[in-house]
Picture 1 (spheres, rainbow, N blue to C red):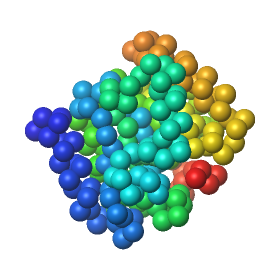
Picture 2: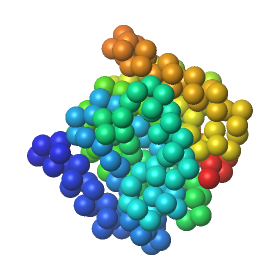
Picture 3: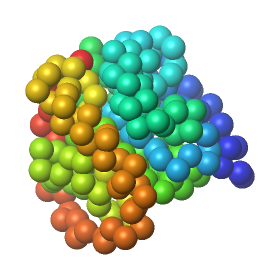
Length: 208
Ligand code: URA
Ligand code: SF4
């Protein structure tokens, strides 16, 4: 299968998926969106209200801020892939549960394999934890790391900055540095990643 075919198949499977309880309240699954040849993949947390209504990622308030951030570094949405660790909306925008993250990783992994991006930008703690378990986002945000064979740059979730205005400048500065990090991506060494502790699901403020 071509990368395009893999993405289309994942997108179709997500709409019918019943691998975790998040399918019960789903209107539309949100598989993610972007070209199969994207060099950069942004991975958020999960669909919110508007994403569930439209089947598209980051179309609410957090999405508008993400658009501003992309604009600020002259990246177009159409040239990046934007997805999430869970493809169906957690009711009331609660945190995804560990078993939901595990179930849905089946789709995200296939997307990553198909796109094979040069850089993965994680937005928020849940997608960061997929690559860098146990890291604290306040310690590592905006830093390029090589983990699980991927160049990963963890960022605060844009919704976090909407809720904590003091984070806004930090997020903007991290984005401003992205082009430089991407340009030098190949020189970043692999980090030693400690195995996750039992029940180390990240603690999380309500982001929505
Ligand atoms: N927040 C996310 O993490 N993902 C979306 O798609 C929208 C808001
Ligand atoms: Fe399936 Fe993922 Fe939706 Fe759960 S969140 S039902 S695993 S697509």
